[in-house]
Amino acid sequence: MRLCGLRRGAELLRTCGLAEYHTSYRALSNLPDEKKELIKNGPDLQDFLSGELTDKSSWAAYKGNLKRLKGERLRLPPWVRTEIPMGKNYNKLKNTLRNLNLHTVCEEARCPNIGECWGGGEYGTATATIMLMGDTCTRGCRFCSVKTARNPPPLDPDEPFNTAKAIADWGLDYVVLTSVDRDDISDGGAEHIAKTVSLLKERNQTILIECLTPDFRGNLKAVETVAGSGLDVYAHNVETVPALQRHVRDPRANFDQSVNVLKHAKNVRPELISKTSIMLGLGETDEQIYSTMKGQ
Image 1 (cartoon, rainbow, N blue to C red):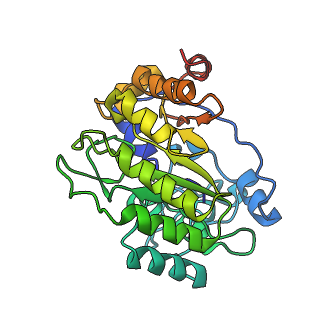
Image 2 (image 1 turned 135 degrees about the vertical axis):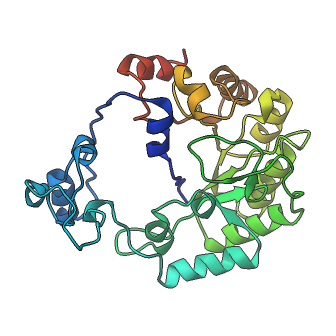
């Protein structure tokens, strides 16, 4: 499984009043040559911002024709369009999740790549990321499409067992478990996550488990509970550079709190792999990125 998520960058660009920010993209060696050529010849962000583009296959076909044609519907360029989710693998995975009352970040965050990941296809295997503790979060981060509420429904006591059963039946070597934030629960759901990991390890001792956890409001006891559950990778995202934390994340989250969570997990189990991620393109500078990567 791999983690997928929809980042609502356009909304953040509007709300934060961000300046133009250029990023370089590394070539994806596993893409078909046709798609590589489309990306290479496609317009960059500034080209999209400067005018409306018609539906052609390369940037050369767009030049001199940047306005909507009269009587025609403006369509997305082919390099940003995705296929309608369908297929045997997609339907099988969706039915399994529904039958066991499980949720995925793929669905709840409205990820546009869900058809590619769940369907597998010619160049990959079917993947998904289980989202524990329901489909409703107590936080309201501006980049996320997951539902929010002050008091979500109670935790499903069968979810740890059902999750372990589903993943074990899929026969995976590596799995990523993520979750919503549950500030309405005293331990933030740490015991619930730990139980899921423990049950999964009982069914498959060789599987590698990564947990992308909440910050548990800085509750280090909760961090210890998850870190000691038997997982292999402890992940928690700082999401963005310190200067943009208040613009991007829920006010209850902050950079120092997130860093302390990661440090404590590593202190509890030094052999544990710790991991974090940040989003780029929200207005951060190169210097801020370097500083964030150093944990400053």
